[in-house]
Amino acid sequence: MSVSHRPSHGGVVVAALLPASLSACYLGPIRVYSTNTAPELLNAHAPDGGDYVLETEQKLFVVVSDEEPDLLDFTWTMSREGILPNVELITGDNPGSQVVLSPDPAYDGQLVTCIADDGEYVSSWAWTLVVE
Image (tube, rainbow, N blue to C red; front, side, top):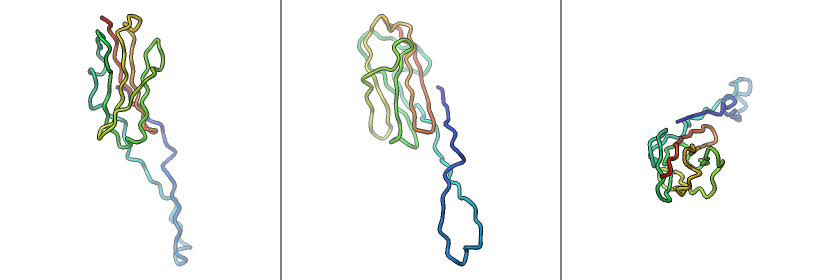
């Protein structure tokens, strides 16, 4: 698994209106920090980093846990094919994504990667395809 973080600029500055009696006091900016963490893999078609054997048309899938599930964006890529079309979302308590692949001999040895992006963190998981 790979995780990267998009650094924020010190949180969000929140302004507050103060009563006139406190107008001479300087409280300074209030910073609100995110408690979001990277999407975490809960389940997948195969363990991360392993080989995945394609003998028939099959769905490759991931199910993740994330504090911001509504913001998740999934991208599937293949090392020589680029971004894969026809990606489907998995909805429910734990979101995810799936893509259908056929046992095309051109896919043999390619690395298929799923990237989950919640707007702040990006996680990815990869498998080497073996076509039989």
